[in-house]
View 1 (cartoon, rainbow, N blue to C red):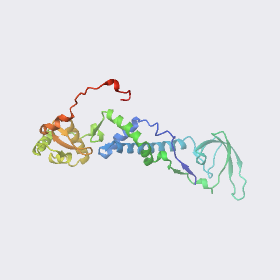
View 2: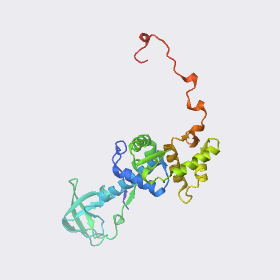
View 3: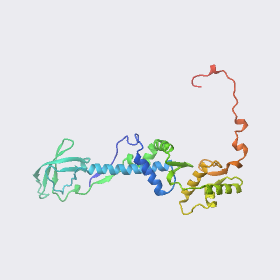
Length: 285
């Protein structure tokens, strides 16, 4: 059996550009999961999809425009063949001659003009031969390994995707997670008024989104993460509510009940201009 290694060009990930089909893929991925995802999770999904499509394209390109050569085959003059054992080169059958090997029995030798300009001869009509087994395709190239790609190029891909999503009005980000705007669950004014009442009873808060969603009785048959994401989005757009949680946690507070010291800059942080001699400053300063 011949083993053939799949790979892509060396600068593929270094010169990566986001295409329309990439965005469509991420949109469909979010739709299928019904769960908002972080940029890191979307980058991982993007890499997986690119690897899948590139593998498919490579295999299609290699096997198109000719027949796969196997020694057991019988071929005709001017027939286009593909040789996996020769790096998927294409070749044109130009002639024939009888095979001469008493140990192999009756077979034929085809003369082939390869695309690299070389003339080669190959056995045909030979039932017992190692190359009659379909080639085993391996994909152990580092450029097709998602873990290695993430480690090597994850930062650049993150920045690229983040910049795109921030500027694309079709996606909404809440608490570092993204979801298509058109698929966000509708949270109406009645829900928001109930959320205000719940926070009012809690002396302003803070309360996590999950508690608010439960108490205002949002549809429990929908993916809970999507419910909370949609509620977060609606609360964020309403000036009555303020998100005050630390990084990674979403906590809501009623803005009208926030302590004054939270809304004002502390006195010790107010800027006070100090006189100084600018002529003593260097360019670096």
